[in-house]
Image: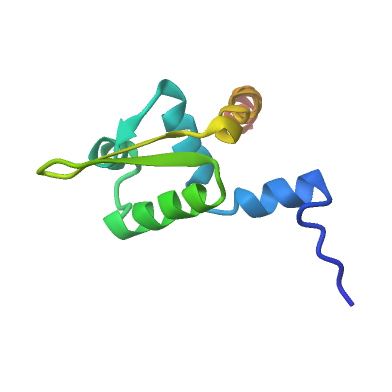
Length: 110
């Protein structure tokens, strides 16, 4: 019988929560503060569909990493921002940026 380490092992837990292809990039974009859906979509790579972004945002919201705030107005206004636990991911993103830049240098030196 396979043991599920989610909620027990920090690496397995983090990996399962961050499984979405764009989850880390979305979290990075939200480090500058609240952002509206359309602005977020403009900052995503070309080819990302409205549905894909919506699905990824809903997953991050369900996992508690981001907050969705809907304003009662016409046209509808929705903003996304990091939650309290999402804010704690900032230092991880900073380290990933450093490592990612080192890896880009490595790739360019080949």
